[in-house]
Amino acid sequence: MERRWRIVWTLFASTAINYVNRQTLSVLAPVISKEFHLSHTDLSSIFGSFQFSYALMWLVGGFILDVAGTRLGLSVAVVWWSIVSIATSFANSAFSFGALRFLLGIGEGFNWPGASKAVAEFFPAGERSIAVAIFDSGSSVGGAIAALTIPWIALRFGWRSAFTFSGLLGFAWLGVWLAVYPRRKQTGQASASRQIYRDWPSILRRRESWAIVVGRSLTDPIWWFYVFWLPQYLSDTRGFSLKQIAAFAWIPFVAADLGNFAGGYISGALVKRGMPVMRARKVVCVVSCIPLLAGIPAVLTPSPFLCLSLICLALLGYASWSTMGLTLPSDLFPAEVVASVTGLSGFAAGLAGFGFTLLVGTLVDHFSYLPVFVLAALVPILATWSIVRLIPQHE
Image (cartoon, rainbow, N blue to C red; front, side, top):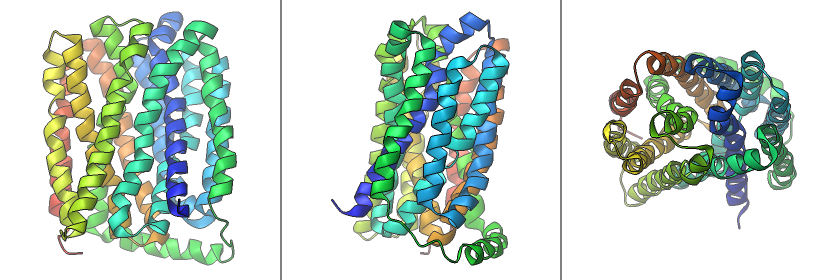
């Protein structure tokens, strides 16, 4: 296997581990909220603390990665988030959970800017969408692994052991990463830093930058909703026990995994058939909005299994759209600033997700899940409009 494919599959593994770490709390939320008497508003504050630091580190981390390099930056980030995950096993209050989630977001915010930068460095345009689909699909696989394994560990050894388990995974990954990713000469970092500072004004003046920022800001919160709230929703409204969550909550993540590869494969196939790159990306974004609408009948159906099936369809559409959103920076910008552009869009999307997560807690405590599902289905249409209108067709 060529080195670039070994790198992208190692990034797939880091993404999967990243999601096992963050999903551990979400999967255990029904148990922990009962033990510590947490309301939905309390949970939204805990989840939101992660999203706030996570958003900030997309921006700061993107710049750090462009200066320090992907190899070193991701190594430090994975060690950081693994230690924080293990420390969460000692949490005993809403405040301590929130503080540790904040620290977790600092480390995990490096993963996607670093992975996008690696794809820009090692892959040509025709292979980028499938490379992004590979590493981004780790989020779905990690979510599925968490849904399957974390309840079993919690039921057998206690919920605190589950956080220790998820934290140890990162240390196993580190050795593989250091062996696979080539060393880069570190000379010239100061000039690289100055160049990136000079590039920022031109980045901010480009319509394409704002298309990516707006597009991701209106789609990422939908993913956060399903990731953070699905186990709690199944417990609240569908009466699922922790065992039933383990049995069924992983299935939507498999659907999202299929969406990652479907979007990446279709986009790449269209490019290979001669369609301009930007047009191929836009076609996939437009088509992906259709299955996202399935979230509305999902919340309305009385059947829990039809509900899960429709959520699977919605997440398939989201993941296909997301693959395009993560590919666009490497299509539109030079490799030297891809992590910075990706970080800027992730920062904006993280802040939007933070606000949406707080809104979810308020809406659920005072109304129901219905308005949240409706918003999650309709807002991506505006995101697609921004991509179509603001990014020119020419290469």
